[in-house]
Length: 400
Image 1 (cartoon, one colour):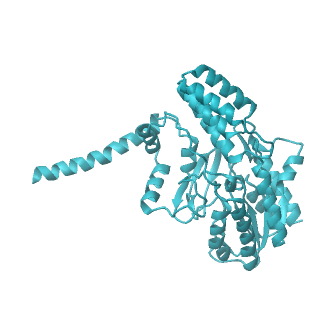
Image 2 (image 1 turned 180 degrees about the vertical axis):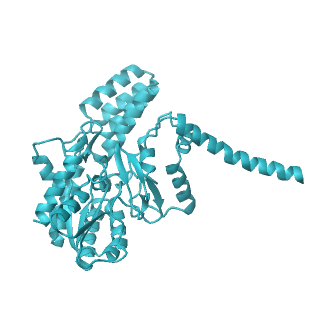
Image 3 (image 1 turned 90 degrees about the vertical axis):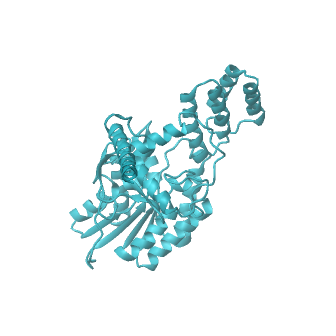
C-alpha cells in the first residue's frame, strides 16, 4: 500500500515537473513565438465574445508598449460613478483602432481624449477595440457596455475581420453567428495555449506541422455581407436607444487585390494540365508552369492549391508554406471584397441616418508621410502618423 502511494505521488510529481522544465527551456532557449502565438499571448478565450484582451497587461507587443486596464481594454478603467458633466465616448473596433504596432497614447482614441482635455473639455474616451473583432462581437460588447458607461457618442469601426474567413480561436468555416459556444474544456485549453511558450511548439511538433497541408476550400466569411449590414444598423439603433450619437468610420483596407475587382481566374484546362504532370511525375515542368501562372494570376486561389502540390512533390516545404499563406490571403481578400463592404457601411449610414466619417478617402488623398506600420510586413494597420490623421479627422467632424 505504501509503495503504491509513493508511486502515485512520484507520477504526479513527474507530470508536474516535466511541463515546468519544458516551459523554462522554451522560454530561455526556445524559438521566438510565431505571430499567432504572440497575438494569443495578449488574449484570453471567452464563451460569448470568443476572446477578450487580458486585463492588467504591461508588455511589449509588436515592438510597442501595450498596457490594459483591470477591465481588459487598452483604455481608461470603467467609472464606478458617472459624472454628469463629463463627455463619454465609446469606441468599438478591431486592431486598427486598438492601436496595433503603436505605443500607449498613440492610438487615435487616446489622441482624441488628450486633445479634448487640452481644450478644456471634460472628456473620457473608452477604447474597447480588440484585435480580431467583427461587428458580431462588437454588437455583443456594445450591449454589455453602453448601458454601463452611458456614452454620449459611440464610434463604430469594423471591416477587416468581418471580411475574413479565419479566427484566432476556433476557425471552423462557419460564420460568427453560427460558430458554436466553446466548451469550458476548450476555453481552458485555449487559455493554456495562449499563456504557454512550450505548449504551442509541442503541438506543432506532435502534429507534424512541418509537413505543409493543403487548405480545404475556404468556408464562409466570418460576417457575410447581409449580416454585416444588419449588425451595423443594429449598432446604430442600439446607441440611439441609449441616448448616444452613433458615428460610423469607413476605414481604409490597404491590402493587395482587396480593392481590385478585376477577374483573375485561371482556366480549368491549365490547372488540369499541371495536375496531370504531377501525376506523371513530371514535377519540374509542373512546378515551372504553376509558378508562371501564379505570377500572371496572383489573385486566383486555385493556382496556389496546385502550386502547393507541385512544391510538395518537389520537396520544397518552405516554398509550399509560403504558397499556403498566399492561398489563405487571396481566399480572404481578393476580388474587390473591400469595396463591397465599404459600400455597405455607406448604405447602413444612409438607412439609419448615421454620420459617416470617410477615413479611407482621407488616407487615399494624403500625400505626406507613410500612414501604415510597414509597407512590406504590415501595410494595413495605421502607424502613429495614421492615428494622428484619424484623430484630427474625427475631431474636426464631431468636435469642431
